[in-house]
Amino acid sequence: MQHALVVQDRSLVYLVAAGFLVSLVGVGLVFRRFSSDSRDYFCANGQAKWWLVGGSLFMQSFSAWTFTGAAGAAYRAGWSVMVMYGAGVVANLFVARFAGPWFRQLRVTTQADAVRLRFGVGMEQFYSYLQLAAGFMFSGAQLFALAIFTSTILGFEVWAVIVVLGVVVLFYTAMSGAWAVLAADFVQALVLVPVTLMLAFICLARLGGLDGMFEAIEAAGLRGDFAPFKSTETVASLPGVSAGYFTLGFFVAWYLNTTIQNSSLLACGKYLAVKDGREARRAALLASGLALLGMMVFFLPPMAARLLVPEAIESLPLNNPAEGAYAGIALHLLPPGLVGLVLVAMCAATMSSLDGGITGLAAIITQNAYPALCRLFGRTPIEGRARLAMGRVVNLVCAVSVIALALVLAKMGAGGVFALVLDIIAVLLAPVALPLMLGVFVRRVQRFVAPMAIVCGLCTGAGAAFLPGWTGGEPWLYHERIFAVVVAGSCAFFAARRFGPRLDHDTAAIEAEFFARRDRPVDFAVEVGAGNDSRQMRVIGCFALALCGGFLLLALAESSRDHLGKFMVPAVFAGGIAVALFARAKVARSR
Image (cartoon, rainbow, N blue to C red; front, side, top):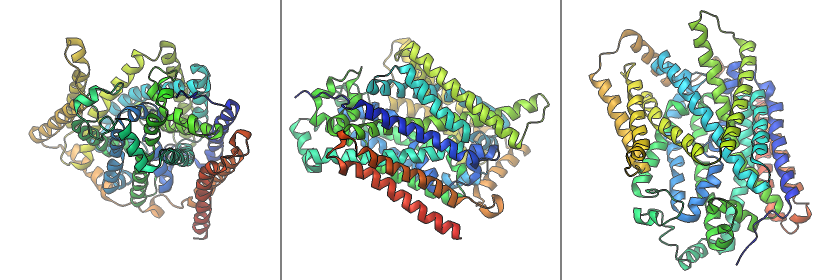
């Protein structure tokens, strides 16, 4: 049977989207007073509570691709995508056990600061400029991808969506920095978690529960396609699924790569904002728990779409119709107000990565590249409120640059350029993350070891990515490329460490300082002073209460009649969080 998957009340969807964007602008306005210097602005001065950071970690671990590309893969390949997303659960548990508390105890402001503390100034500058190049490309590509999907649902031009979403992110990040990023991510999670949970339960109810879903899979002849672990032959028969994905080798490589990246100094940024090592561990555990919830609920709707409305999904006006499976099943099962919330949740998934990426770029320029240039030219860097003002201006420039790059990608089209940008980022990320992870655990590492391992990994990754195309050979599969980079980078790292010269005095001093900080617990009262716990809880509680009211107002719309129970799910969730935060704020203030 053919279903018309279109928005029935487009004006209500526009209203929901506008309300969401206004709430993010409100976050920037409210949190602008939380920053008094550049350390406040770029890492919340190590004062953020674990639940705020944990929610932000969860939101920045995925993007709208989860609900488009990954949802399309779940539509075709079923349970395999759930297994794939379990990597975030495992990686965050590993970080909670080891690296999370260590990251906070480094007592630095940016990731590049942590790299300098471990490997010296030269490595800091190498990382800074490499991260700037990759970060601008990645953020521009993210904004472009989000605009493509959003414009398809809302019917706007891609360039207009890029400008509107980019300006909103620009506003609240430039105004309030890390505090606004953390708060906006948490507010976005208050929308995304209950909405995705509700849609998953509605899909299961329509199928008759899990037993009914398994029966429907069997009846549709999809048992082999939906199997968690697949053979290369099965994967080859699935349209739109890359060769080699969802095999045992793929999962081993995916979990390994995710754990390496989450445990490297590349990922330490969020943990620098929490109060101490104990709160860093709790933040990682919260992120792991939310990742487990997301793994279970994000991909049930596209799988249900394959069982309930496959003809309608295949008729969607997208280059790859399966990528519209999540939005399609939402249009099929939900009233317009909740469709708007689903769209908002999908936007939040990318905006949460985009805001952190832009602020991270501004932090590297302001805290690492700028002081190095001042030293080079014999100038004294500005400090205090002057550095804070500079950080805001740089953040503004970074956001404008990302918007411009996304507009360039939109002008050139969504074909080869977009894929090339993502390939370049993929080639860069794994080789850089590996030595920056090993350096957190391994001692007696000479200065040249990490750059040598990075260069070796980059050469291996670039060769695996591009040589087959140039020579006419078969492209390497994902897990073959990851294994090659990890083996080559690890061999270079440990061989150079083993057979290189002994540590000189300066390198030994740098290493001793790194591990001394890593292992020394933070005394918050002595090192930071008075916290603002109750203030954080009260402000976020107010935003949660406003969201609760907004969800209930949507239930009053004519198109929402007979759907009150569905609107109560996100309303009760946000209201419950608000009550809990107000109660904890009262306790914290009394202390």
